Structures are given as C-alpha cells and as structure tokens.
Length: 140
Image (cartoon, rainbow, N blue to C red; front, side, top):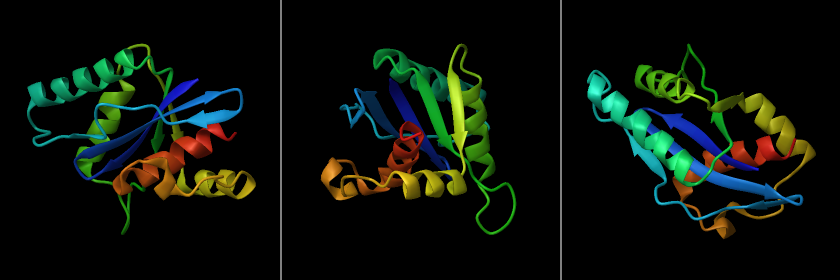
C-alpha cells in the first residue's frame, strides 16, 4: 500500500510518502515535500494546487491520503487557508482520504512505537508530523 500523509500548516500542505509491503514501512523518494498556497482567494491558484496534488498522487500511484486533523477553535486552531486546502484535497475525484487526530496518533504510537529515529529517515525536519501521521496510520 502506498499512502501520502499530509500535515496542513498555515498555507502549506506538507507531505510524506510511505509504503507498506510485507509488514515493512518504506519511504520512497518524492520530487516535493510541500505545496505552498500563496493566494487562496484566487480560484485559478486553488485549481492549480488541486491539479498539482492530484498529479503527484497519480505519478507515484498513491492509494490513500491521510490528513492530520487540526482543531477548529482555540489556541491551536487551523487556519482558514489550511481548511480550504483540506477541502481541495478531499474533492479530488476518486481519492480515498482518511483523517487522524492527534489523540489517535498518540494511541497508535504508544501501541506500535517507531522502530527508527526520525533523523535516520532522511526526511526534512518539517516533515516529522506528516511522517508520524502516516506511520501511525500504517501501524493499525
């Protein structure tokens, strides 16, 4: 199974691709680590974001997308642009989108702790939340 885990932060969609084959989790190479939305009020830019995201999923034959949920209110609430990006991803035709809350992720990692230190993965530091989301999802 190939998944794309996503963390939405402000105006960025930070991604990490993961595979699960024979009980082993792999991290395939990817041409990009994040998508940046510089103007969410521009319809064409939103369509371009959706097209670029779908193209990446098609090129790497991704089967599922897992999005780390954010709070809707309070100190740690997600931004309005982040929720627009989430909607654009959800509305990609034929895409299987799943969500994981921080509580779900912590519970999964408690039962199935990471066997490797994040720094040894070769991913960038800003991808850590996306990686742990995908790892927790695959560790079901």
